[in-house]
Image (cartoon, rainbow, N blue to C red; front, side, top):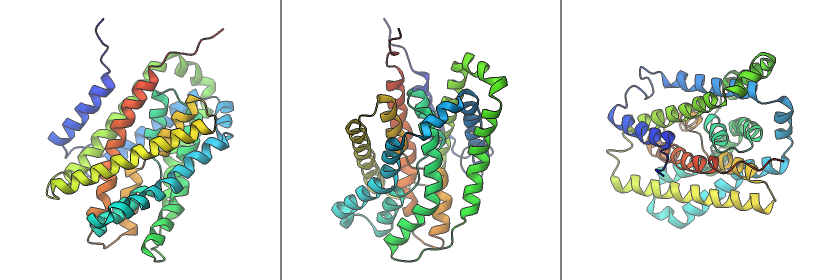
Length: 325
């Protein structure tokens, strides 16, 4: 029997290739308008999840406090501590601005759309992923600049908390609420067209992969900085990701979590957001001549995590359905 080709994995490779060949359309300010297009994709995903997810299931997801503690502790405690450990070991060989960039990566919030979409693909606990992705973004508004301020030993700069919260409400919470309100009319159709909903999720991820690589190519991350420096940053990002993967998996097993919850913990606890990371960096590090080095780890980590998590999601998503009686 010939092995079945996963179009999603092929699509990710194609998206990366297209980004290197044609970065301008998907880069910031490109004719695809990725800033708006990605937000619209997030809104579509959360609207469909709201329409297809019974409120009781969403409520049940919010009550899984052991899982939520693992996810948020992974994002804002374990990840920063691992970053500090990495810098303690290898900091002497890393430029100062890049050291700050690694630490900044470690204290960023988790992603929103891709964390949930990957959880959907892997058949994890979607309601808990929605809750944790939302909570992580809200906590990051306060915790990320506090961690950076601690690292820099300064009070930090003013941060537009209201604008960030408003953005989350507009593009995530409002579509989710509208989806919930539309359940009397759309729930049955969403269930019937589950494959179409899955295609929308996967297409959004491919869009994120493309636009993420477009920005990094357009900003010259892959050229002009030195192959050795980029390779070292990639190696550091890989080490951090796999350490978080092992830690979250171990915590899930120690807590007796079912596989669906462990999947959610891995995808929500190991991811870092580029969409919020870049504008936050431009505010926190305004005027810093080393801003490009500070952004380098998140520019590499973000597409890397999408590629790795895409493979993991496809693998977990192919597991057999549980037997029913």
